[in-house]
Amino acid sequence: MEEIAPQISQTENSKTIMQRIKDGIIFLKEFYTECIRVLKVTKKPDKETFTTIVKVSGIGMGIIGLIGFLIHMIQQLIMT
Image (cartoon, rainbow, N blue to C red; front, side, top):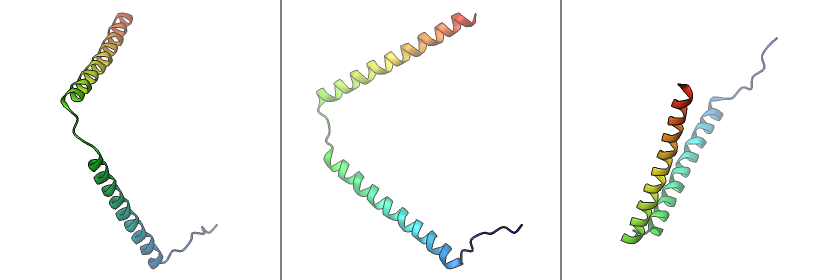
């Protein structure tokens, strides 16, 4: 049996490639403008807010580390 494949001319193929490039450029421009907008809206936190964020993040990392350590210890007790 003969395989039937759509014949795409070179100009149609180049149009789709050019369209993809244009779409990529448009995406990058929109991404850049959104990044600039976010940077304009954000502000530097004051010292109290920063210390609160650092404390909460540290406590969270400590809890996750403790849970991982406990799981590892339980695994070691079960395996031996």
